[in-house]
Image 1 (cartoon, helix red, strand yellow):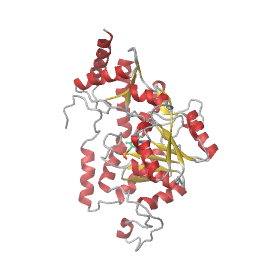
Image 2 (cartoon, helix red, strand yellow):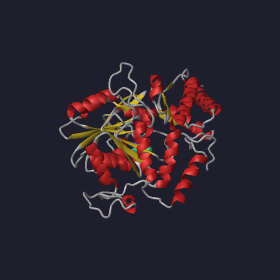
Image 3 (cartoon, protein in one colour):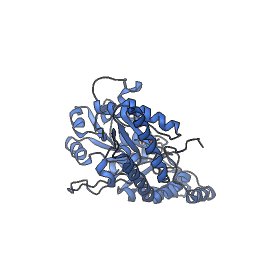
Image 4 (cartoon, protein in one colour):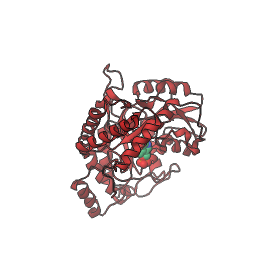
Length: 388
Ligand SMILES: *Cc1c(COP(=O)(O)O)cnc(C)c1O
């Protein structure tokens, strides 16, 4: 596929995914049907919500979450400046305005509840919490803030599938999984995520009113599905609201069910790789590793390290590329993109520092532990040679 010695991510696939895809192809039914229904039931049980809707991507899930959650043109949606661009794009798609809030710290690059509180205006309708790298936001504070002010809380949770909120003091939402703490939550099955089907996603909620709207909006606003009519459960349909086609399909749903069953094992393997990285890097001068004390809660989607400055980060990145180790940057500060005004300069100091100094290293369940050592040795060597 590539000439990387160590890619950034890799699939956690075996013959079970192949068999699942074949089963569907031989069944003669490819669009939304029994596999999608079974996946939704299993996913809702896994996260612990009443409802789960499989959709064509997490971006579609975010669009539906904002629409069904009542975000309207002219509203403001507060969201982290360190995030993938989908949440901001979908905010604009519903006619609202993204308001970027700073992250809590260089070793806690999730949205800062205090920054959210100071960004609230009369137009604020929703807050987006993105669980960076698989590590949960400060959900107790965000839940309290949003309840107190009547704001919709959307979990942008693609990194955090399988992560759990454990508060040693037992405060709510203690014991809840990522996706079961806000009003509505979105997941992605994109190729590089912990649960991968190529494209796809899931939107989950405990709220019946939001679920009813998502059910309609996902499939053209139609009141029955092709599968219902095929089985003779419905003869016709009405279009209750103008909607979209954000449906998922049977082949990927069958693959997703295998991937969901394997997810706890995959996340445990990821934790083992992260522990090895920490062992090799924790004593190295000039490297900080985010979320040090919260490992047990994380889904470990990303292995991110933060350097003393952008120059060192960029030199290490070059040295790793030379050693054919793939790295990435998660993420450029969203407020600096042309589409959102390119508002460089004042504000969001921590987000901009983080974007300049963070580097994402390879992480996937099958990553050999001696390759983790190889990556760490290269990093240390690069930092040492810069000192001399
Ligand atoms: C991957 C990802 C998305 C987009 O997911 P798609 O399924 O590709 O639409 C959105 N937000 C975050 C945080 C992501 O990691």
